[in-house]
Image (cartoon, rainbow, N blue to C red; front, side):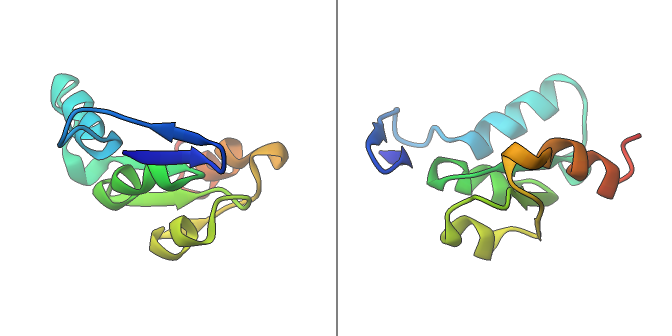
Length: 91
């Protein structure tokens, strides 16, 4: 069980989380785990942020996620994904 907002609760099978999903997708596309970057904003993104080689929190993310992220970017309303792409040289 996890929360993605103050009023939303998400339930999934034990062991399922976005971190495991990130690894699954990386394996599927033959991407080494050390080449992964993930961006998130809430507690349901925590496992993914911790699993990725580089975990990015958007500026309006919950504080707990920001604290575990490797990098905090601008808010999602200010172009967070674009800033992340620029910062880590994907373009």
